[in-house]
Length: 321
Length: 229
Image 1 (cartoon, rainbow over the protein chains, first blue to last red):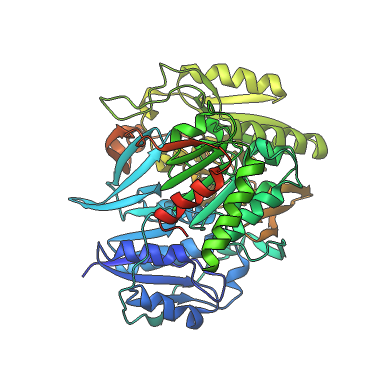
Image 2: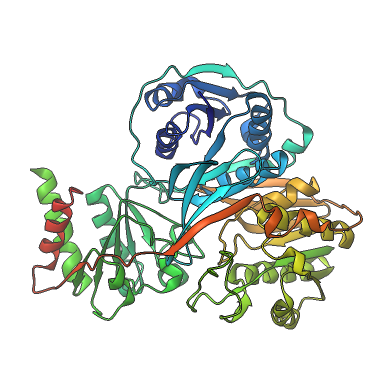
């Protein structure tokens, strides 16, 4: 059976959800092999096995995790040359896309980014992408080399299908060029227990209507009741009400969760470009003319300072039962 | 310091953007072209670094004739000069080919630092910087929130999901001859292709209720019905 390489996203201990999703997708096209860069593969192995990785290629040692992007691309390129996989899947995170870009140059292959779905076509995987702020849906494929596809988190529900996940050394030596960009310090910002914005199944975002930084506590409380990540519109981050790294939109993060709650957000194209592929969208806004309502599966026209606390309380009540 | 900023002219994001039915390429004719917003930040960053460290800023653009409007705008922002890579044979190039063409030009102009926006607001791939670095054999740092140059040393805060990484790399100096082979670029030789495209079917009209004091409860009912709670 054709081998599909899946670059594992991990934090050195656990595999991220998106990798389980990629393994699930990869099983449509062949037998997935995970590729693990850095230490901790033994700890991540169980989950990789659960979601169908036949093998886990590990590139560890030499401080490989202290170098950015280039080592992963070199390891994948070495594996592509040796294993001739039918495709390589990475997560469409900023780093994943850079790995994909470098791998494409190294192997002379076409690369497709931000796929939100994959189907089997005559000449390999056909990727669905959502472009121009979600207005147009495109089907694309790679026609040169080994198809490299960066897939967005939450594109598919991860489904278990146990496999061996036998650990093998990747056996690819790094060049000096892969060590050109070195991490000298990792600074970890206080983030609490919330899930990562780009990975979260549910995202609750606040915008201009929230009014000030203190009021974002309402958004956080609603998010926590749902186990959701917190996002913010550009209006809110530019005003300094919420940190920039949580901005959802064209100039911030792109999210594609199962559920997106837009609170006090008007829905400028800037924002829509970052959230329009969410599966279900709920809107709370006092302006019935706000363009965000065009996207709403469920909308409440009302004062967020009334609606949000009531919603939070109701969710907590139902969750407690 | 020789700073080159790669800039792309893109359709205004406020306009209705579409693809051409015959070749599935961006319809550039029907909309206003503007500087990619994220490239404007790159230009500003380039100007800031040139002022802090001495040196000049060159704008590099690949695109049709029309892109010269955006080049003039970039020059008015304070850039010293511009290179416009213009050839009908480049039309329809994908990222792999675009990076090959730009790398050849950069080989000729030389550079200490090449700066790009994080992505273009039309194609939104976010891979060009990585591809350029790979082709030029120089270090690359993305998601750079704070850039400092100290002699030939580059120090950058690279944003991460958990905060940021402090990154160090050394500045490059690469010079080589350009000469773009038309066979390497353009739609015919692109390594990827659009199979089909369609306007997204309009979202099924959702339910919108007016808050009569029970809006939050109704919202919770919806979430429960959808099994989110």
